[in-house]
Image (cartoon, rainbow, N blue to C red; front, top):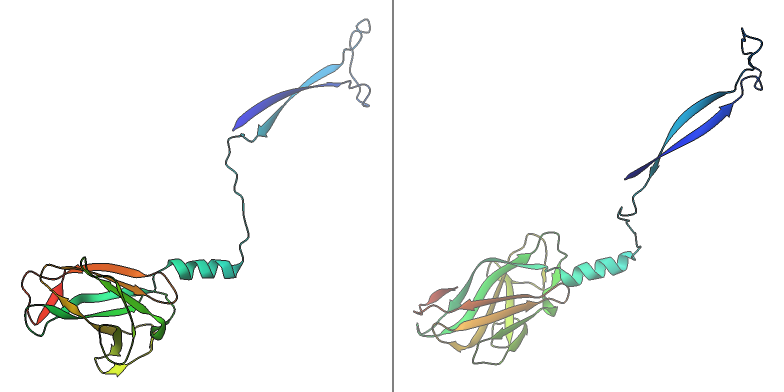
Length: 197
């Protein structure tokens, strides 16, 4: 911030303003009094940042937030199930809504599954778990078509047999909100129930 001092010279002739100057010496002509006034003027610095505001329609903001914010979160572990203690043939895990997220239509959600040696497979919601459809249940019993706040939805689907130490990529793709991709690897020794890491 810069400061500029301006000295203003004010000449005030007291006699012209109606004031009487006492003069004890008639031979001396009274001289006008000079009054000095110092004025402090503040000038804003040109380096001061400026803030500009822009109005964006609310609909645009809401749409952008919905498209960029994940609405789904993982709850707990991802499990790989085996029927022969040699290869994983089924995947199961639990999901829930992220804080402040809107409900999700599970009938429109898709899951993409792949391994380094297989092409990605897109699964859709169904009544039974297959290699092309996944189930959405609460308490392992009730099939549900939507996920609401404070609900834990169990996802289950079958896969082509996956051997030990194989990396698996899973991506949850809801119709609203960002996708939730994650990768898991089968353990070195396959058991009936395996925690994928």
